[in-house]
Length: 325
Ligand code: KG4
Ligand code: ZN
Image (cartoon, rainbow, N blue to C red; front, side, top):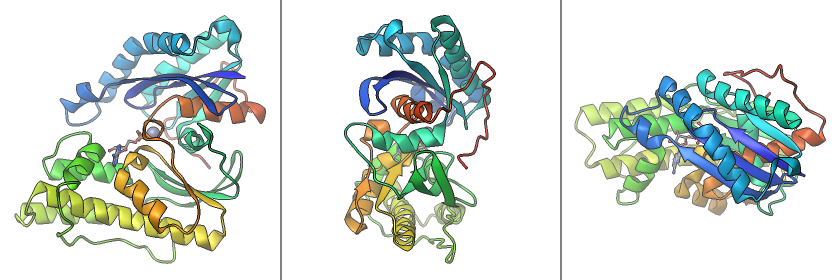
C-alpha cells in the first residue's frame, strides 16, 4: 500500500511516498531555513508564502523519485496540526484537492505522532510497550505508548521545549540560527566548564528548560562565558543530562521494552550517543534526516491510522494546537 505524505506545519515543505508504513520510496524536503535565517527566526507569513511556492514542485518530485503515478497511490496523509495555521493550511488544502481529484482517502496526521512513527521506517520494528521522548521546537514530551495510536502523556515541558531552549541559547551566545545545529557544532570545539543549573522536578516526569537559559543569559551579560564554544558545550551537556536521566528513570519505572527518541532535537549526536550509552534498555532513534521535519514520517503514521480506520473527509481542518492525547 503506497501513501503520499505531505508536511507543511512549520518551515519545511515536504512530500514523501512510503510503502506499507515502513519503506521510504521518496522523501523530498524544501527547507526555508536560509530565508528565515535573515530574520533570526521563523516569520509565519513568509513561511506560508514559501509553502505555496514549493508544495506542488515538492509533491511532483516525490512522485517522480518514487516512480509512482497517481493510480498507484492508495491514500494521502497530511499534517493538520500542531503548527503554524497559515503553514498547515497550505498542506491540508493541497491534500484535500488531491484527494478529491484522484479519489484518494484522506488521512489527517498529528505532527507529533508523525515524529513517533519515524521510528517504524527503514526496517525498525519497535516493540510495545515503549517510552517515547519527543523533543522538537515546540515539545518535550515523555509519552507511554502501549500500542498503535495508544498514548499516555506522562510528562511535558512546563515552559520552553528543548529545541526552543537550543534556539534561544544560540541567540544568547551570538551563534545564529537555527539554534540546535549551530550549538552542536560550536559545542564540538568547546568544554563543559560553565556551571549551569539543572531542573529535575523530582517526583514528576515533567521538564523545565527556561531556568537554564536564563542562567546562561545572566552569565553572558556578566561576561562570564569564556568562549561561545564553552557556552554551547556547557548548555548542551546540561540539557542532554536532564533529558537522558529522566527518560531512563521513567522507562525503568514503567517497565517498558524500549525507548524511542524522536523530533528535531533527536538529530543531536551527543544526545543520541548519551541515551544509547546510558540506557540499559534498547533505544531506537531514526536516522538524522527522519528526525527533523519530513513527510515520510507523516506517510508512515498515515498508514497505521488508515489501518485503524481513522480516515478523514473534506471537512478536515487545521488545528494549530492539536494535542497528541
Ligand atoms: O521537529 P522539528 O524539526 O520541528 C518542530 O516540530 O518543531 O524540530 C526543530 C527543533 C529546533 O528547535 C532545532 O533547533 C532543533 O529541533 N534541532 C536540534 C538539532 N537539529 C535541530 N537541536 C539540537 N541539536 C541538533 N542537531
Ligand atoms: Zn517537528
